[in-house]
Length: 103
Image (cartoon, rainbow, N blue to C red; front, side, top):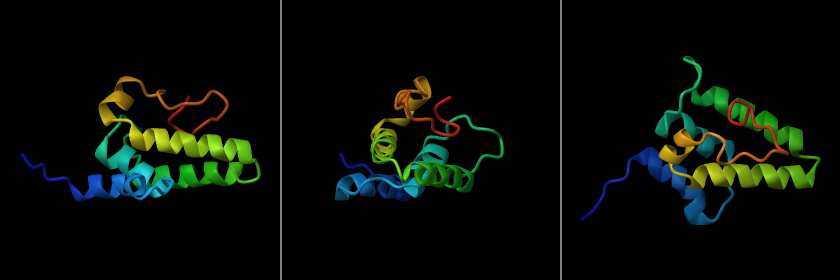
């Protein structure tokens, strides 16, 4: 039985398939467009990407925090949407605050 993957799902999985670390674009496309997690009514992928990139820049001078944040993004990419909806803090690290995802 073959399954047809949506183009968005393929794009979201591409960094993991290629072994590249996920970037804000792929993570936000997954969270906002694929998972459709309950955000503020007008929250869009662009908002997510902006906040994610601000977070990345915030940690760029702190290698430990940057690695922890990258681990967070990898966790988000590797966790099913249903699991993220059931436990929105499944990928949260108490040391790393992530806008709108880890209160």
